[in-house]
Image (cartoon, rainbow, N blue to C red):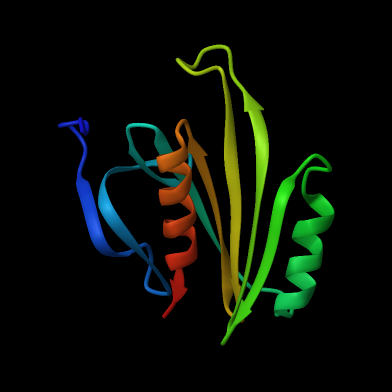
Length: 143
């Protein structure tokens, strides 16, 4: 596996912010771009944005807002509720002629807690990368 030597490498329990962590079972490069955290490795890239809850909206209200704004062509939608978290995932078909693999899929993930939420998009090129994408998204926790 070839990670980029000019960027930091992260693995294991990774603290994205004081409030949010994720578990990276494999090594990823890390950078910040346009205010987003980007974690990537061959065949899999995560774009991560973390939001606060300045308006004090309930997790259900934020979930409803996210679903209202989501693409109508989403597939494989799942909503899971655990102690203190609501987790939404769905997949989208993507196309980008500038990519080596121009047609691919992405996983859109949202992890919502009382104090805010994480939006995490995973762009994958292989079935193994898809599996790893879901594993990382499901590991996101609010501290």
